[in-house]
Length: 82
Image (tube, rainbow, N blue to C red):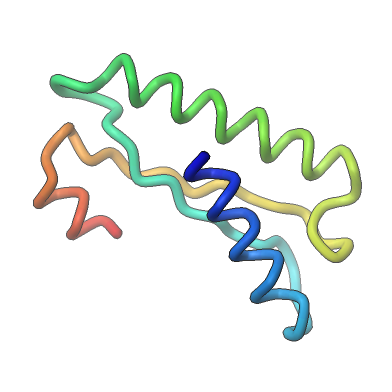
C-alpha cells in the first residue's frame, strides 16, 4: 500500500514537470536486523512494481530506477537515510 501511495504521489508530481532521464524512487527498508524478513518482502514488492511500470513504458515515457537504503531495523537510521 505504501508503495502504491508513493508511486501515485510521484505520478502526480511528475505530471506537471518535464522528466529528464530515469526517475529515481527511494525505498528505505530493513535489510538486516529484527525486521529483516519483512524488509525482504518490501524490497521484492518494490522491484516487482518497478519492473511492471518499466515494462508498460515507465512514467511519462521515462524509465523508473529504485534506490534502496538499509535502515537496519533502526528508526533513527531510517530517518537519517530518508
